[in-house]
Length: 175
Image (cartoon, rainbow, N blue to C red; front, side):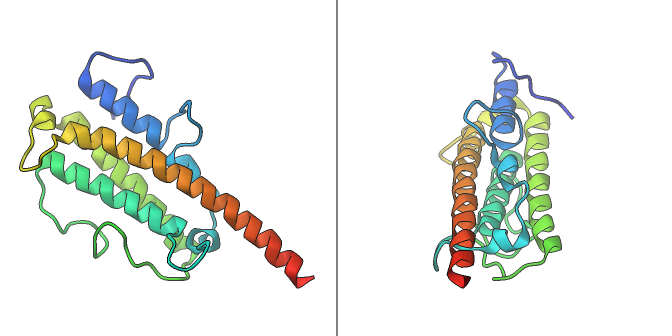
């Protein structure tokens, strides 16, 4: 596995890998990355919603995995429909999940990140800069996915705080 340097590089592939990794699982100046945000989340916490119609941590996690898959597919020119879950973008997940199901969602996210990273390492640079039927070249999708990870990491951190507050309020109400 090619590691991304933590130093800024003039090599476009190395720079994209650095940005991708910092948003996902490397130390970042902005605080927790996406992988760090889902760490130590329970299955109960993963499906909790601050109110009906809002996304849960589990839904955000699968959504992020899906978009890593979609960007990888654009880089490699793959066909649609090979994502492990049926659907696209936002997936209808069960209202209750087991700890194993939650771990499987996180493994899906990890696996899609690794597969995207591998596509970045192996694809010719010309393939990263060609549009392949899209208005944006794949390289722009890669730094877009890094921004996407950072955005959703913040959402997940907020949901974790709201969950904790709701748990405290429920406990007080029971007294």
